[in-house]
Length: 151
Image 1: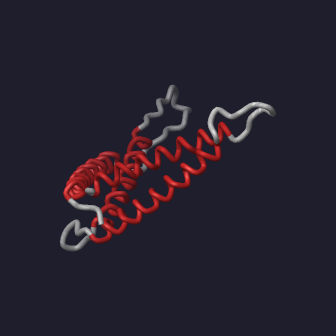
Image 2 (image 1 turned 180 degrees about the horizontal axis):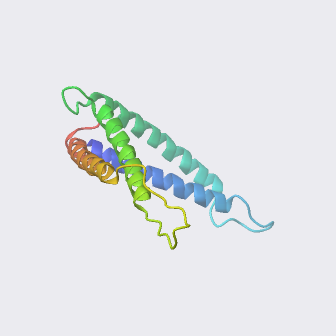
Image 3 (image 1 turned 90 degrees about the horizontal axis):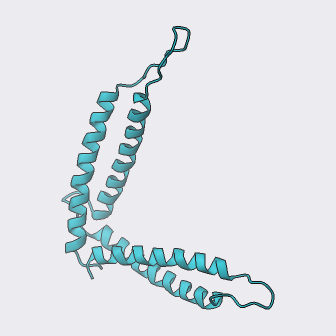
């Protein structure tokens, strides 16, 4: 199994767990004398089994990510951490640029004038650069995911 296939399976397990949680919640109580639409005990057993499989899969993914070399200095786990931090910084800077760009029109000279305290153009350039770096890093990570066997 390739690492990318394991990541797809992980997402599927996580989706199934969320669905089971909702179904269990709907069926844990019924009106006296009525039967639930589905057996919550059977779903709890299924949930337990899926969670065990997910745990095993995540351990293998983590082991693979910590072993696979992204480049000469970093493992895949290091690159994933850097990529996620890059994305978080990009989102923050984009929000700052957006908020600083909002214009507050004044209808008279007595209204308070609001001015931006940051250089929006400079921040937007940083956002664009981070977006480019993120795309490049993500593309390389995705390529490794499809060419690397899961440990």
